[in-house]
Amino acid sequence: MSTLLPRCARRVRAVLPTRADYAAMARAPRRDLLAGLTVAIVALPLALGFGVSSGLGAEAGLATAVVAGAVAALLGGSNLQVSGPTGAMTVVLVPIVAQYGPGGVLAVGLMAGVLLIGLALLKAGRYMAYVPAPVVEGFTLGIACVIGLQQVPNALGVDKPEGEKVLAVAWRSVVAFAQSPNWTALGLSLGVAAVMLVGARWRPTIPFSIVAVIAATLLAQALHLSGAAPIGTLPSGLPAPSLAFLDLSVLGSLISPAVAVAALAALESLLSATVADGMTVGQKHDPDRELFGQGVANLAAPLFGGVPATAAIARTAVNVRTGASSRLAALTHAVVLAVIVFAAAPLVAKIPLAALAGVLLATAIRMVEVGSLRAMARATRSDALVLVLTAAATLVLDLVYAVIIGLLVAGALALRAVARQARIDQVDFRPDLPGEHGEEEHALLAEHIVAYRIDGPVFFAGAHRFLLELSEVADVRVVILRMSRITTMDATGALVLKDAVEKLRRRGITVLASGIRSGQRRVLDSVGALDLLRADGREYATTPEAITAARGLLEQAGVLPGHHHSPRPHRVEKVGL
Image 1 (cartoon, rainbow, N blue to C red):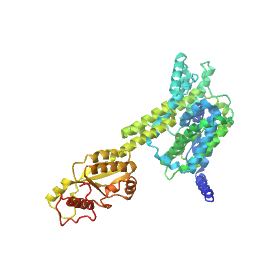
Image 2: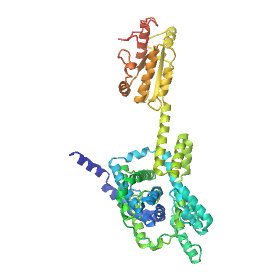
Image 3: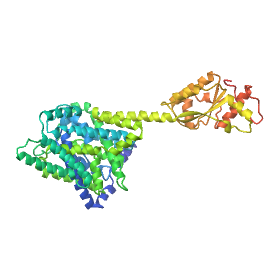
Image 4: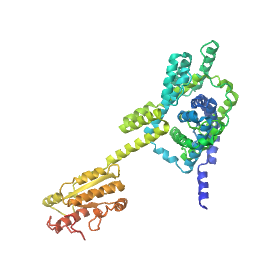
């Protein structure tokens, strides 16, 4: 107990920002303030849109961007990260909101925050790097499809049909639109998306999302005054976020969603931080500190009526491209959004839902990196399969199952690939023969001794192939196994090897081994296979020593004549001859 508390205190201090992190905020404040303002302009329509898509309203999205953005900027492990509501998190939150309401979102956010802090204290950040790229690309593609489908009701100007499956909801929305078309909403949505996509190619530095939303809002107001069909807008006045009521009786059923939210927040935040590092020179994030910052942010945001948050790759990229160099930029982004919440709420409330749907449609399209998808598809069939399965599972099931399925399939395919690297080859042992020997003796030895070299891993995924190959050895007197090139061996591999040796011994064939490593010796001894690979308790460090022992056994059995150049091994029995 006396050592546990100091150890915990050191671990907590390790995930807290240092004075140097904050000192960097004074190096280029003008550039950081400008970058933060630009990011806020880009983030505003996204925060509104993701809040609406989550089911809790635009104010929830803004509260998340302000609170989580500020907390993560101050406590996170990256100097350039921008946090807030994201499309991926919205995909996870929609069914939670539908089933449990705002109280369920509050509980899930708090529980996810605690889990993220726990992961940070356990130094789990480094393990996120082991998630395969096809899994990341697959669920990114799936999330983009889900986000796009979620916008169909607002983009078509119809009331959102009942249901949780986005495919079914989108189809019912199309049917409702066909019965009563709202061409104004559809035109606004497609127009905003087109302006964003074309503008991003023409002038990437200009925040065309806010330009398109302002234009769509003005046009919608003009059409409304002219008597056109009504277009849905945000709730009037954007009421200040309030603390949601928490029903303690549902906490048990929210554990699984909380784990999903925490896993998504960890994965997306660390991926975003890695992208930010790659876009700069000299910046390197601390993964555990980033998890800690995201954990505290997810504890804070729901208390102010927000939703669980994570780092946003798109907004982080904008932050880096506009010259951000410290946490001041992300903090400025949160402050600007807070000013908008309190000063411009009536104006924000006039934004048409169709315009926000267009913003998110364009965002979903831009999430799909065609080059990365093409590279994964061309890399290997395994990568393509993992990508497609993960994307399909994200669309049909949910994100948690998608990631689990992707990881399991990727792991199984990786094991199969590793297992295929292992092989057993018959080798010519004549270069290893000590002393001078004629062709007749070489030929005579070759009739009775065969050597095999085992390369690669011998483990559960592919060890049974060795049993089949070794058991089919031709009718010889001695088999020498050269084991120095075995990279790894587990108990299954050792048991299979033991079975093969026992089958050979029952056929009267002696099996000797050379080059057994210390790690192999332990696992072989644990299953009783080591004694079968030694003659009279003696091990052979090299192949020539094993050949000498084999020749001695053949001479004792009378198969080979004695040879004065071939000293017989010490204490060798006639085993199986």
